[in-house]
Image (cartoon, rainbow over all chains, first blue to last red; front, side):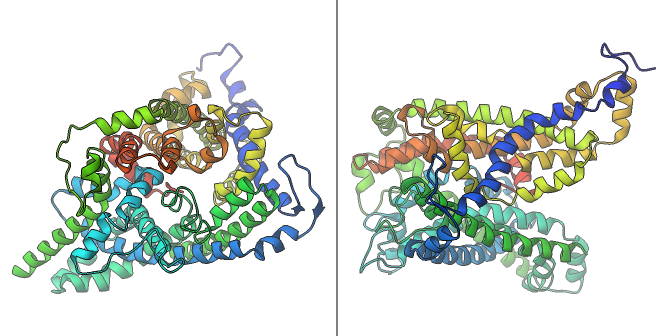
Length: 306
Length: 275
């Protein structure tokens, strides 16, 4: 029989009404204060006009949304964010599919390759961004050295030739692709490892060569994983911020304005301008965009599962 | 047969090129931090420092800014964050996995839908909250808001769910309370999941930037990424000093990765890191 506990029988403890609370309170406390309440509050805040840090506000309405949507900087932020998302995600996906496919073969030195491809997962974007900043240097940077080696002209990546060229954003995009590759490769690799090896055996028996196998078997069977990976990356790329920070001493691009991203704009409105209501409205717009893509992800997932 | 050899050649060729591109920034960072000022600024670039034991950049960087202090702050914040998060996660996951209470599934469903809310959206309110709690410019401001995680709780709850009930009943017969059962049976079994959670959380804490930028303005309370950011924004500091500082910031995580690569990669494969 069960031993008696000093508080009574075991069953009394197991059925104690309030016991779940002991386990859930620490978790719930942090969650309510720092996640649940802010979610509700940000919606309320976005409708309070002239909202100050103290909580005082001047009016209620859509003022914050109209101000934000009419702000030139916010339009720049949306434009840059979309360009970033829709270049980084496709390019990193294509490269990652190729690399993941190679990593999935029987190769020697897998520990070395895994280390090399996955290392950026753990490293601070600020610190590595600093390295990229110097690699992008116009005069003595490695990247321009390599470009001139192949006969190209050096590019003023982080500066401004003729106003604000597209190179600032290109530099951020290149860094962004490098940064997101490991995560993408890992998700795709685990998708590849779930493909039944029988498909490959059958194809080899039929005498298919490796590029046919890749195009006719690997890619189609990997498609669901590719889709999901793209959506996850899309969502994280919409929040681009850390990738912009290292290049111009924390400024948004060489003019301080040309490389606004949505998160950068939110931070500026809230932190520098102390416009909490507008920052809240901008973050709701960001959320709605992310929400649409999350729903898309769920929908694809349910299609895949069936 | 020869076609196979050509394939193998291209496999290694592309893998090696790719690996070199991925790893090059780390090499460049470390190599540059051992270069002299003249070596750093020469053109074409010097691919290797002449003296790999030239630690003067590190010495100067540590003199120019309190990087030792930043390092200690980063360690304190990371350890405290991971410890607190582990406790709330273990307890929460057990609560949701083994306790019976009304609305359990509905509440957990709500939590999962909260996962898609980006932290950036919560930042404004959280900043107000920590201001009211007088936590701004103290180290706990970097710890307390991150002491719970829905994502980690979700991972661990799933693992707890997979542990057969028979273990639970036999523990009850042996007279163990839920509390003992959790710490003596569940937690040891869940060790691989826990290690993964701890590693992912440690990496996230160590690299955390935006929140630190908003809440810490006192030099002696800065963490490594924040201290590095201020140092590199300073007009007066030389690139090779900055890169030495960046090396200090990145190296602990590189070492962690070399030792725990499989755990980290498995954790990432399950869905989340780098926001």
